[in-house]
Structure formats: structure tokens, C-alpha cells
Amino acid sequence: MKDIGNFSDETKVVHAGIEDNEHLAVVPPIYQTSTFKFRDAEHGANLFRGEEEGFIYTRMGNPTIKAFENAIAILENGYRALACASGMAAIHTVFTSLVSKGDHLICSKAVYGPTVTLLNNVMRRYGVEATFADTSGIDEVKKSFRDSTKIVYVETPGNPTLVISDIRAIADLAHEHGALMVVDNTFMSPILQKPLDMGADIVLHSLTKFLNGHADVVGGVVVVKDEETYKNFRKTLNQIGGVLSPFDAFLVHRGIKTLSIRMEKHCKNAQIIAEFLESHSKVEWVRYPGLKSHPQYEIAKKQMSEFGGMIVFELRGGVKAGETLMNNVHLLQLAVSLGGVESLIQHPASMTHSSMDKETRLQAGITDGLVRISVGIEKSDELIADLEQTLQLL
Ligand SMILES: *Cc1c(COP(=O)(O)O)cnc(C)c1O
Image 1 (spheres, rainbow, N blue to C red):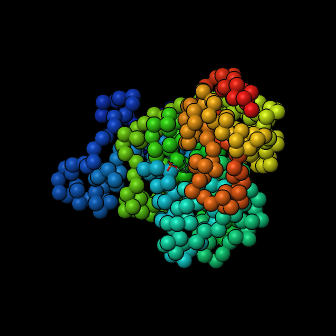
Image 2 (tube, rainbow, N blue to C red; image 1 turned 135 degrees about the vertical axis):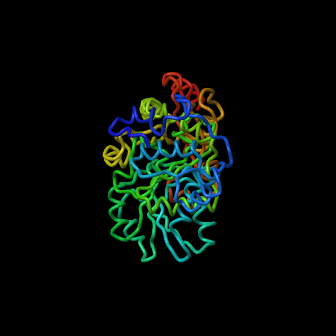
Image 3 (cartoon, rainbow, N blue to C red; image 1 turned 45 degrees about the vertical axis):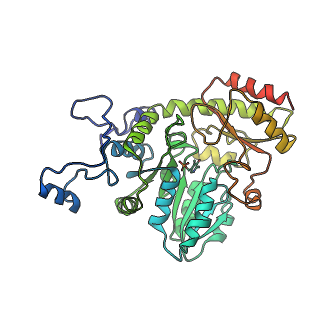
């Protein structure tokens, strides 16, 4: 890995993972190949034995993917990273690498919907149990430990309620109980929050969101702190096979060059829009980590450098009013996903979190009227004008 040492994140995003190459191209080539030739039989055998560095077959490793993985490992202050075919493939790789039949894990109540169903459906069939706890305080986490607890899995801010969990406090608790702490850092990106620096053992992302930032790739990544975990995860990923393609690795690597300036604008716009909504008479409540009204505002200030691009709120008039809003916005687009340059609006109860039953949703704070906005990098006045013209209809 090229040493870019103590540069700031603004500089690191531009240079991380970029190595000199055969033709000294400023942008390294895309190795769009499934397989790599061996110089001779001995070379092939050495590579398979791990006695020589090199590439064999793209599921097992590829220079374009590796360059991208190095970039993410640098930004998260980790040891190495593993690029996966999606955020869910990254989460699945972590679970299957770390737990076996009879093991238990603790998971935040407010998490990405399919993470809940992965635990409740797939992992449960393999004899792994999960307890969903409110991780915004440590009491419920404390009570949830069993002798068999191997992982405490936290998403902060949690999707979609933006509830915030204290990474350092929970990491300490996990370690006291001999468990590892895993953080889904998708909503923050390494620019705004660095979980490994606060005691977390593993950090993962859906690349689909802020890291790629252009809504044209589905991908995931896991970052680890030590060689042993890296080797274990790499072996599992080789076997389950959910790897990123070289072309998508190239696109995300390109995307992260603007991560720092994109996050700056996402945060700035979101703060302005959250304040606009909070002061609006048609709005019942707003949740944004950068508002003093956020219940975990103090924790947010402690562990996040800025407050991100995601806002949730409920209109007076609940579900019906929310529908009117979603059907009448023009600049904001009605679509799931988040973290792209374009602003998106969606309704978690009927969309991203519809795979959870209503009771579980309500326990996680996902009310039927809750609307989520992923604030893009457009001009904030124009986003506000779009929201205002729809709020006038209510
Ligand atoms: C989108 C998302 C995921 C899943 O990622 P995919 O790339 O869609 O598989 C996981 N966690 C969070 C917080 C997400 O927003």
C-alpha cells in the first residue's frame, strides 16, 4: 500500500489505494478478467500455497478490487478490507465468518430491514439466535448478553429512525463479555465517523450508498483490524462467493475521490432542510442528529464529525399527508436507497421496512407516518421550495 500516512481525509480520498502501474496511468486500469496466467507450473503452485504474492482467479482476488479495498481500509483506519457484492453480502460474510450453531448475537432494534430478516430467517435456520435491543442506551444491551453471545451488531445512526448508539460504551461492554462489536457505518461513511478508532472490531458498509455516491453500483465492504480476522473472512468470502466485480470496484474507487466534498454538502443541505421542517407548522416531528431536539444529540456530537444526509419526519396528518407529499414532489425523487448525489424520498413502513411485521416496526420506532429523505447535493433553496410547494397542498 502506498504510504499516504498522516494526510487529512480530504487528501486521502483522492489518493488512497492508487498505486503506480506499468504505464504510469494516473487512473489505474480496470483488470476486467476472471483469471490470471501463471508463468509456469511452479509459479501456479506457489500462488496456491500462498508462498508468493499474486493473483489467481478474480473471486479470490483482483488488482482493481484490491486497490479499492486498500483505499477503504486506509479511510477507516483498518488493517485490510474485503469488497463484497452488496451490503447484505458484507453483513452475511461477517455473520458466517464469526458465528456457528448455538451462538447468539445482539443487534440494534433500528437497523436496515433485510438485516433483521437475515437474522430472523436465514441465520436462525442455522441455529444462530439474535436478540434485538435498543442500543441507544446500554441497559438493554447489558441485559441481552448470554454466555453464547459472539457479536454485538450496531447500526448508528440506525435506519430509518436515526437513533444513535454510543460506539465506545458498547464496544467496552462487548469486550467485557468476550464478544466482538460490529458497526454498520453506511449512514456516516468514514468521513463522518470512524468506529474502529472508538473500539469497534469490525466495520462494514453498503457501498451502494454514500461511498459510491452516484446510485449506479450495488456493493458492500467489510473492514477488519487484524490479519487473523482478515484471513478468516477472506476464506469465508472465497467460499460463499459474494465478491464485488472489478468494474464496480473501479466505479466505487472513483466515487470515493469526491466523498469528502460530497459529505460536506450532504450535511450542510440536511441541516438546513431539517431546520426548515422543524419550524414548519405542517410537520409533527423531525429527527436529524444535528438538531438539538435529537434525543442522542450529545452522543452524536461526541462520535460524529458532522451529522450526515439523512432526515426522518412525520407530517401532521400521518400516513395520508405523507402520501400527498411523496406524490407531489418534483425535484426529490420517490425511490428507496440513499447516499447518492440526488435527493430521494421514501416511506419505510410500506417500502424499505415492509418485510418487518408491524409490531416489530413500531418497537423499532418506525411509525406508519414516518417519511425518510436522503438529502442530495442539489441547491438547498431549490429542495426547500419543492418541499414547501407540496406542504402547501396539505
Ligand atoms: C442499504 C443498506 C444495507 C444493505 O446494502 P445493499 O448494498 O443494499 O445490500 C445495509 N445497511 C444499511 C444501513 C443500508 O442502508
